[in-house]
Image 1 (cartoon, rainbow, N blue to C red):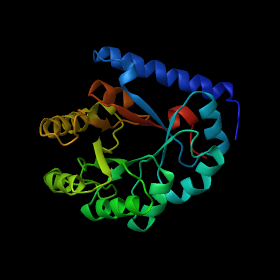
Image 2 (cartoon, one colour; image 1 turned 60 degrees about the horizontal axis):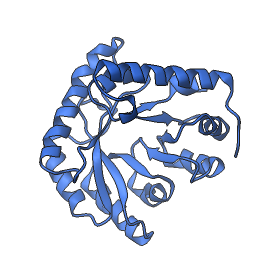
Image 3 (cartoon, rainbow, N blue to C red; image 1 turned 135 degrees about the horizontal axis):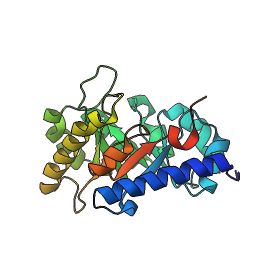
Length: 236
């Protein structure tokens, strides 16, 4: 599917990249060190194809079922596909078929199931991030800090899973600055785990920051930001 991007999409994307660059400069970082994942949930395959034409290379979907209908239309190989929402165990096989990265691994049982499916589908390596629950909200998922070591050990025992980093979804605040301590804590956890070799030879990715607060996330060390509304506009 080939769709030329409209001017509104190009303008919004340019603005996001400008703000990413400014935030990186403030933090003494390179903007190129931050990956932009365009959150395409609820948006049409046609709009996603426009974003591909505009140069977006990574897209984030929340639900396997929605991605199942959308990704084939855009093209499985047209972009890198990230699952950023909760993954139900019974959708593990389809997730491995559809996605390149999973950000929301949150249990040992899910890790083992994904690893088994990868073996059955001859998927030699599958990158995953652990979702860490730092806000302790009932509506959001993730592992507690105290559970991290056990889950990391379980992933290390998996033949096909490769742990590449941590993800968090902090509480929403009207004043974005209030989210900074959550991003800072995730970075501290990543640094501690990196020093123990949890991410192999890599320092470990930090998937954090959305439309409302991605600049603060970049200032606090995000290597992946997940931005939807600022690129695609309000969800229909």
